[in-house]
Image (cartoon, rainbow, N blue to C red; front, top):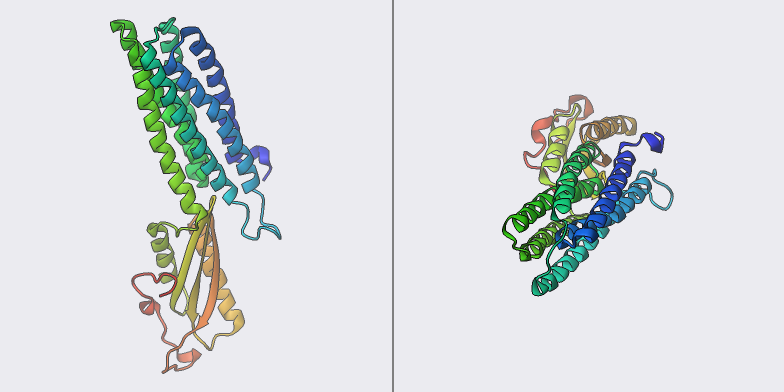
Length: 315
């Protein structure tokens, strides 16, 4: 599929353009009004440009097929991009808090408040459209990088609306310290969300197993698959970007030919990969160890022998 038609790359490119337009508008308004709230939002948009650019490069690299040096593909480029974004967001949140605390002590007065209010309202609307589109593509492609990007713009919606409300209060009640106080609250929320991204990216980097609902889905697919399956064990799962890597041992009749066992496992691999988007499955064949084996022709192996609870690695 050409890169120009890749939905993940198209979404990442849209994110860059949207963040660039918002950053320019906010930065000019912040300099004219002196509002720390608008400046905080402008800095957030500037960081969105950087992070969306990193996303674009990471996704383009992650979409490359496996090669000799990377037999499992390049999916973890997305994970690394997510971690980088989270660290940058953390740094920006800390900077906003630092500058806002200084502004609180100086009791800085604002100018051109109406312009700041208008820009924040416009930014909230634009951020909503971009976040919705990124979230949709992230779910369709199971992209952690696009999900992180969507979170940035979703955060912009809440922060822009909150800051806009604060500027309205500054204009109505002449409480100028509220501008810096609200900036601190927004930055605290940004730090909280950044920590969640760090936790998720480290989980993927350290090869944490896939969520239990996915493992249960694998168990259901094996249990309902056609063929003389005696059981399975040693299920191992991990994530690499949008790729869900899994392998397990499948127990089949010991009198099956290599061709028959291969045909059975190959059909099961294709079924799992079809039912679970992004799945990459490897099945190891083990012979049935029943002591009273009646022979392949009279084998009574059926699905009832497969455990009702999936067995993890080491069971």
